[in-house]
Structures are given as structure tokens and as C-alpha cells.
Length: 321
Image (cartoon, rainbow, N blue to C red):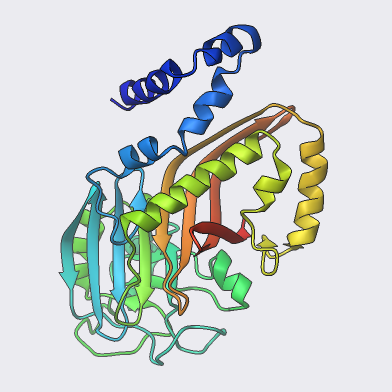
């Protein structure tokens, strides 16, 4: 279906400009013209049709665990175009101290977006953690950018020897053991994101998601076709960091050298995830996608993470891995 619509858009567009066919025949320019379709309004509208984007945009089905620290509630949502509440737990426990986690040992549960790294089963855990656990990736890239420290933030159960007692964690999310076992049956940790906030999550809408997608594919186009100035215009010159190492000017100098070689690039994005980030600034988004990149002898394939602000209908990337 996607291929048919994609072809239809191309054919409709090309009917008005037959010179494109001539360019394709003589210069093999089809790929470049096709790449412009990715940031057309028609294609963006196609991606968003029938999708509920309240908590973000997701190319593929995903589970979203939402934890509200103040309310002690945890929700599991299933995303497959539509947003569906799967389960709600109302007796969870979080860190003994309120507020966002900043330093090692502060007894606070972090606020942010996290992934589940792996699953620990009963025989891999002490009795304190219950029947299973999911370590998270705290501190994430943005946490490190902010200067946060600490480690070992998990989703786990209650102590086996006293599974009903009320206790405070050191920053983890604890779920009653029978409910934790239910959760494990409803998610695949590899396709799950965890969003933690105090009592209300940031939400978004189709207009904002459309703007981000359009900008994202334009950024990809400028990257692929070595359009340095336009490519760099998508970055925040004042606050950008590359892996918390290179500042904007250092990054721009590196890209200028690379782009000057004018190498043909293969650049593909798939499994795109766009999630509004819990923050005092409501226009921060976490973008994740699988990237395949090839230029000359250089090849990369793996997950790409970027953080950006949406300012005046344009993305401004301030952090990327």
C-alpha cells in the first residue's frame, strides 16, 4: 500500500514536469527527486492518517509505560496507529524523596524518557526485587547533557519476604509482584519506552508532529546531498552538543570537511519515534530512529537519538549521539 501511494505521489508530481523523466534518463536524477517527496505535505499527511499522536508519533507498534510519581499510578499503552490503554496499576512505589533525580544517592526517581535495557528473571535477583526486574538506561543522553549522575534505576517488584509492606525505593519504580507479572506478559522490553513525570505528561498534536517530520526529512535531504548551510540551519548554534563532546562550531567544522568531498551517500531512516519530553520547556522532543548510512568506505547502521526544540515551526537540534 505504501509503495502504491508513494508511486502515485511521484507520478502525479512528475506529470506536471516531464523534464524530470529526461533528467532521469540522462542523469539518473530519479533518486534525488524522490527524496524531496519525503518532506512533501502529501507524504506527511499519509504518515499521520488515522494516527493518535497524543503521546507522540511511532512508525511501528510500541508499548508506552507511563509512570506518574505523585499519583503513584502506572499505565501501559499499546500504540498501533491508535492509542489504547492496556492496563493501569495504582499501587506503585517510587523514590523516597520528591522531585527530579540529579545526583547519585538523592533517593529520587528521574523524570524523562527511558528504554528498558533487558529483563532480569527470578534466578538472577535477590529476594528484595521480587520475581523480575527491568533495568532502565538512566542516565540517558539528555540526563548526561544536563549533568545528572547516578545509575541503577529499575522497574522491579516488592520484597518476596514481605510483599505487602510499604517502603520507599532509592529511585526505582516498584510494582506489586502480581501486577509486575501481568506487566511482563503485556510488553516486550525491546519495543517499550518508559515515560516518567510527576502527575501530567506533555502531549502534542498532528500539526507539531507534521512539522517535525517535515523538518526531519528536509534535514536528511540536506545531509544526503551535502547542502552544508541548510543542514546546519537545523541545529541550535548556542546549545548544541554532539555526544556531550563537540560543540556546534567543532561539529560544523567536521561536517564542512566531510561534505567537501561530495561523496554519494545512502541514508535511510526507519522505525521513527517522536516523543514529547517531560520538561519545563514543553517544546522539547526526543527523536529516535534506525539509521543506515553509507558513504565511500564508511558504513553505519544503528539507533540514532536526537533531542530538539520546536521553535517557530522549525526544529533546532541541541543534542545527538
